[in-house]
Length: 122
Image (cartoon, rainbow, N blue to C red; front, side, top):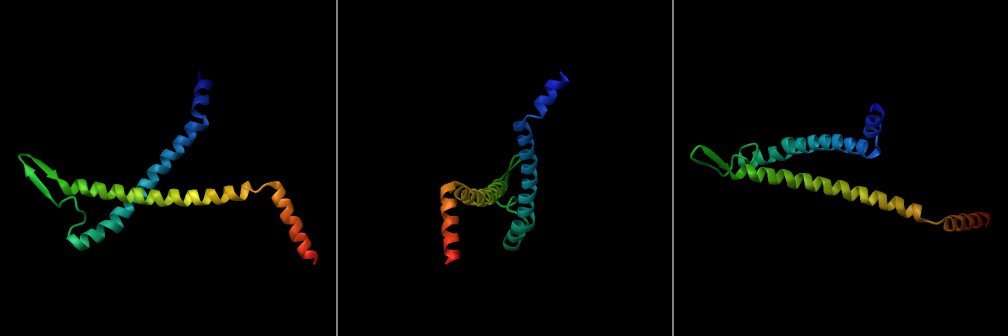
C-alpha cells in the first residue's frame, strides 16, 4: 500500500500540477499587489477613495447592493487577463524562436559550416 501511494504521489502529472498550483498562488499575490499598490492608488487619486467598490452602492432593506464591488472584481479580472496575455505571448515568442533554431536540419547546418569555411579560406 505504501508503494502504491508513493507511485501515485510521484507521478509526473501530479508533481507538475502541484508546481503549477503553487506558482499560480504566487502569481495571484503578484497581481493582487499590482492592484493594491499601483492601480488602486490611481483610482484613489481620481475618485478620492482607494477602490471603486464603494461607488454605486445602495441599500435594499438589510442588504447592500454594490455595483462598484462588482466593477472592482471586473477590473481585477481584466488586469489578471492582461498580465497573463503578455506572459503567454512572451512564452510563445520564446518557444517559437527555439523551435525555428531546432528545425534547421543537419544538412543546412553542415552546408552553412562549409560555406563559412570556404569564405574564411578566401
